[in-house]
Length: 111
Image 1 (tube, rainbow, N blue to C red):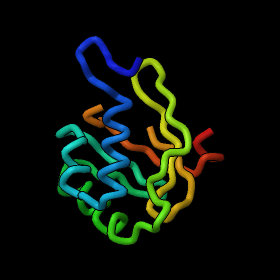
Image 2 (cartoon, rainbow, N blue to C red; image 1 turned 180 degrees about the horizontal axis):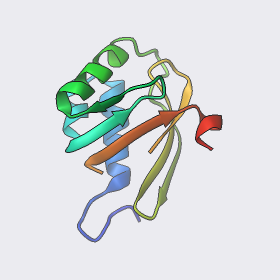
Image 3 (cartoon, rainbow, N blue to C red; image 1 turned 180 degrees about the vertical axis):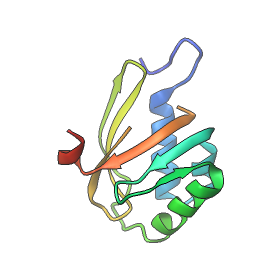
């Protein structure tokens, strides 16, 4: 089951995250992140805080292709959820809840 003792539903947050991405809803997406969250980009760079994460996500949501943000694998584990999904460009990436950190890397690199 995905609900922690405090009622946090990690799988639910991941589904909400992909839904916000697919709908190109930047504010809804950012609301899923903790105030101290960061996005570590596989292309280089670390985006810390809401304004920086908006800077990271805005162009990606705008350029998202038809099959962007589809879930390939969703696997709960102790302390979180592992998510393999399609990035904004439709290419598979691995993603590591409010969300404390997002780390993306090509699947082979993440393994």
